[in-house]
Length: 106
Length: 127
Image 1 (cartoon, rainbow over the protein chains, first blue to last red):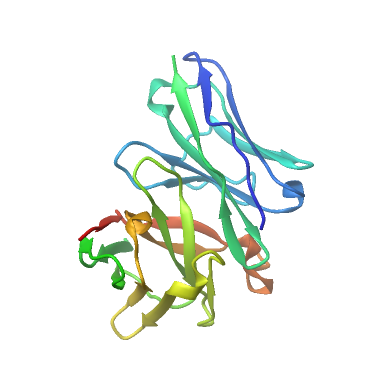
Image 2 (spheres, each protein chain N blue to C red):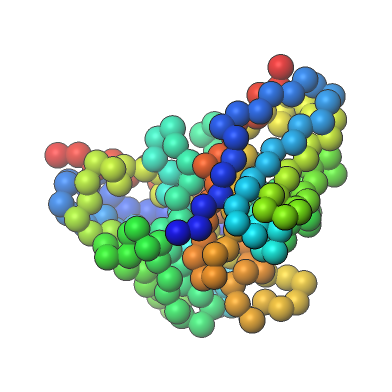
């Protein structure tokens, strides 16, 4: 079965750039979504179709992909960005999530 | 504004069937993907299955033998049944709506994304 791999944790200082990778076979040829989840809340879509940002999502969130890796980049990270982040892609007709990455803003 | 609300028992006994309903308010149930996703306490997201805009159903292979999804368009609801539950099925269950924009939406699901989520409902499996 198709798998997406994320680092369990990433740390970043306030104001710096955070990058969260998601790897999977041929992921660069698929569309990737990214979700942000804070404690006790439902996930929120922050990136879809790899690079697109839903309305209302700050411009500091961006997505990219190449080869087998999709990347979520947060520029000028703020304390409020501390959360769990999940990547998601389609494997034919099935939905696959990465294991999630806990972003800590130190 | 479209909202999703999960409902159903918060406690289910082992070996019984978990049944949840998602009610869609403020919008049509047509022309979208409707999916269930769950999250065990302290763990990541797991896709359960979805009903497509054409009424086709697709399930996570690891749960396929125990899952049934259905929809009732007259009530703007879609439902999940998960049979023979164990403690491992204890989780927050979310209903979500899949959307698509930008073209190529009806050539396959790959361009669809889950932009709208319910608040989730915790289901505990315990005797």
